[in-house]
Each structure stands twice: as C-alpha cells, then as structure tokens.
Length: 446
Image (cartoon, rainbow, N blue to C red):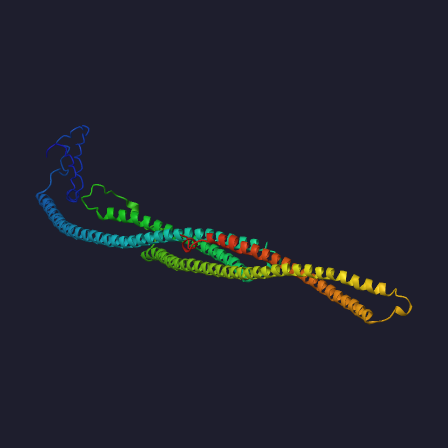
C-alpha cells in the first residue's frame, strides 16, 4: 500500500453547463498540512485508498448513463425551445400586424370624424358671418327708421300750428299717427330680432368652440396614432414603457368616444338649422317692415296730396267769393252815397212845401181856407215825408248790408289766410320734409 495521501477531486456539474449556467471556477486544491507519515507497519489491516475494479466500472457506467440522460433532456428542451420560439414569433408578428391594422382603421375613423368636424366648423363659421351681416343690416334698418319717425313727429308738430277751423283731426293726422305707431312697432320688432341674432351668434360660437376643441384633440390623436402605425421592429426610437400597458381610469370606451363627437355634431347641426331658420325670419322681417313703412308712407303722402287739393280748392272758392263780396261792397257804398244824395235832395222841396204851408197858415180870417193849393201842399209834404222815411229805411238796410259784407270780407280774408297757412304747412313744410323719407334699400338695411 502506498503511503501517499489521497486528495478529493473537484465537483463538475455538467447539468448546469447544459442549462447554460456559467461554469464554476475550478476550486483551487486545498493544501493540507503536513502530517507525519505512518509507518508501513502501522497501516497493516486498514482499507486501501484505491477503488476496486467493480467500483471503477460502476462509477464510469453511472457517469455514462447520467450523461446520456442529460443529452436526451437537452435535445427535448432544444426542440421545445425552437417550437416555442417559432410559435411566439408568429404570434407576435400576427398580433403586431393586427395592431397595425387596427391602428389604420382607427386612423380612418378619426380622419372621417375630423373631416365631419371640419365641415361643420366651416359651416358654423359661414353661418356666423352671415348672421353678423344680418345683424349689421338690422342695426342699419333700425337706424334708418329714426328718419321716418322724426319726419312723422315733425309733421304732427307742424300741423299743431294750424289756425282756427283748420286745426282739425283730418285724414292726414290719422295717417300720421298710424305711421308713428307703425314705426314704433317696427323698431321694437327689429330690436327683438337683433337680440335673437346676437343670441344665435353666441350659440354658434359656443358650438364652434366645442367642435374646434374636439377637432384639435382628434388632430393630436391622429398624429400620435399615425406615428404609432409607422413604428416597426427596426425603428430606432422605440423603448420599453412597462407601465403603459396598464389600463388607466380616465380612458373612455369607443361608444362614449363616438357618442361625444356625435353629440357635438348634433349640437352643431341644430345650431345650423336654427341659424337657417333665423336667417329666413330676418329676411322676412326686413322685407315686411320695409314694405309696411313704404305703404304707410304712400298713404300719408296720398292723404297730404288730397288735403292740399282740398285746401287749394277751398282757397280758390274763398278767393272767388271774396272778389264778389268786394265788388258788392263797392256797389253798396255807391248805393249808400246815392241814397244819401236822394235824401239830401228831398230837403229843399220839403222846406219849400213846409214854408208855403207855414206862410199860408198866416192868412187872415176867411182867407184861411182849405183850398186846392192847401190840399196839394199838404199832400206834397206827406209825400215827401213818406219818401224820406222810405229812403232812410233803405239807407239803413244798405248800411246793414254793407256791414254784413264787411264782416263776410273779413271772414273770407281770415279763412283765406288760414287756408294759405295750412297749405304752407302741409305742402311747403310737411310734404317737402317727407322727400327725405328713406328708400327701400336703406329701410332693408343696405
């Protein structure tokens, strides 16, 4: 038996090497302390450090069996690994292709919705611009009604200065009062319509703002999804984001996403319909108010013309009658002069007859007789007295007639002056002022 001391061999794990584990570094041989070597006589009867042949065969056979088993298991793992790699590669490529396809479909959906939003945004913008133009027309039409209102009120104020019997509530005044009431109602209607237009403009802008916010979000989402769709396995800008796969609380579902946009589109469509209805209403309001004002203006002008014609005719008749009265005044004055002269001419004969009677009454005694001369003189005096009485009565009647003629002359002249002044107010002031009445285009807001 050899006297060398046996040293334990390092353990080498072939299974770990087969599974890819790194090889453990070889353990450095332990340096045993030197022990005193026993003498040959001392080792007699103990086991020797050498194995037996049977143990030698058993040891390497077991190593062979373990190696064969490990080789078989390694082959199975390799086959499974290859199959798994191929399956996962195919599944990953399929999933990636499906994700890319879904991203494409999503891009089409977003683009379609974005186009609808853009179309309604442009429509709302055009509707708002049209409403702003109508608002300007309404404001101009409202400003234009101030001129007819001032004309009508000025006409009424001017006609209050008519004099005497001409200060009458005639057809012209009634038509002017109708015109004032009509203008006030038109102004109130235009103000209400303007308020509706302003409110609709506000609603359109709010709806447009919601559509623009939605369009902006979809624009960003489209760019992000387009960028995502361009990613590939060879893209250099991809990186790991482990937390991105977790579901977020604020994420909405496709139905709520579609409903949100559809609600915005429905709201925009409602505002577009309301705008269209309001535009037609405003056009009808402007057309109707303009026609009503012009029709009433024509009625007032017609009434003025008729009234002026009546005044002219009355003035002509009064002037004709005044000429006749003045002629009669002259004739009557001459008649009075003639009557006065006739009365004066009767004084001398009366004096002569009365003097004759007086002197004959001085005849003495029986000479004082009612003879033919006496009777003739008495009849002459009575005749002259009767003539003077009738002439005095006729003179009084002539003077009364002259007084009446003078009164008629004054009345006619006064009435002619009234008619002249009324004609001046109606024709020269009111009708001249009404020439400034706005045209159809101005009353329509253009």
